[in-house]
Image (cartoon, rainbow, N blue to C red; front, side, top):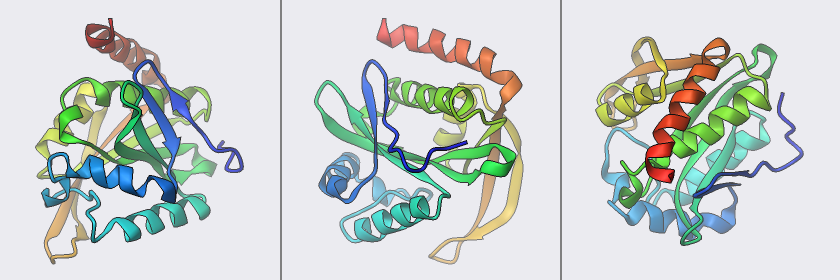
Length: 199
């Protein structure tokens, strides 16, 4: 399903998704500073204290063939504005998750998420030939839940007491998905939404 030996770069009109590497450390930190995103208790955005572990974990997951992490680059300024990844990749069942997504505050609610997810979904369904793409988010991340639904994903359910966070809080996780038979219609909807701001 995935050619792990060949680095994957995805590109659209405004965005470029590049394979994550250590050289992007400062760019990621600068993006996270826009809104001090690491302070959002229900997300995992790197800070100066956690960036090294964040990168090490993402790159180890890639080496283990469980994840393909990207940095998101705004082509107008050629600057990093966030990160995302294919994760929980299950090649034998042709499924994967799109997760660990975050954007600098300046680029939230601008259409960037729609454009980024369109790129990732198109590549997943049309190149990797997956039969389903999952999305998961924290129960209390209402903005993320709404954004996922706006993509056209349907809620599969809620994993109660799914995880214990570092501070001891127990997390409920909301699970969404888009399946292969829905992709044509979802793709048309995303193209319509992008038309509004891409022109």
